[in-house]
Amino acid sequence: MNNSGAIGLFDSGVGGLTVSRVVNRLLPAEAIIYYGDTAHVPYGQRSAEELLGFADKIVSFLAGQEVKYIIFACNTNSALSLPVLSSRYPLPMIGLIKPGVAEALQTTRNGKIGVIATEATVRSGAYEKEIKIHDKSIEVFSRAAPLLVPLVEAGETDTPAVARAVRQYLSPLGQAGIDTLILGCTHYPFLAGLISEEMGPDVRLIDPAVSTVRGAAKEISRLGLLASGEASPVHRFYVSGEPHTFREQAQRFLGRDVGRVIRADL
Image 1 (cartoon, rainbow, N blue to C red):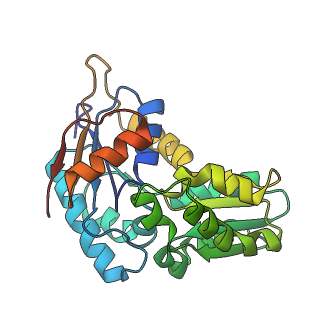
Image 2: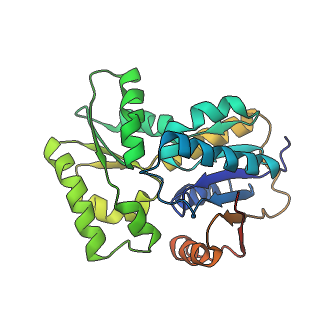
């Protein structure tokens, strides 16, 4: 590994772009290689074995691109695949669960934390387990929100359908009296406005992307792998599905053209 390598990120689809935009903001000199597994989105109803198989192939692909660091820009794989793959590959990696939990614990005032995530992430209990490691007194209210990823992937971030889905999923969390809500899927920050409106001003939203990228930046610096900044970084985007659709969605969500998107069916 050397400091000229890119940072690799991957997700089931466009959700991980919420993490890549934070990398662009906090580490502007770093090149990015992003892989969206759009042929298999959504991940939420997949088995742990399936997800590990997908993630293993993607990490192998990114390693072949000589990335210097990998960010699991997907909560589901952060929960289910990172513990296995971090010992399988000689690459530094970070996921979203631990940084998100650390921020939520610093934020909550009443000890009631909500989590919305995919079905697979909720089933894993990853957020609740990590919270309880640090503070057993915290009450955790987890809610699977299976419709939200397909809606975001379809470009529906401000339609009546997505507003109804958000209300349906969040209503029980509001009734539980949470004061902190972890957005436990990287697609959900695209719905932050709707979610915030539904939960009200007294509930703080936690997007694990920022704390995760800050953690990555510290580790990359400690390893002596920060980019020199002498040249403009080149970002590359790969997908397992149809490139044109991803490029259109990425442009809409990021507000800029990401350029060529390459299909790489692993």
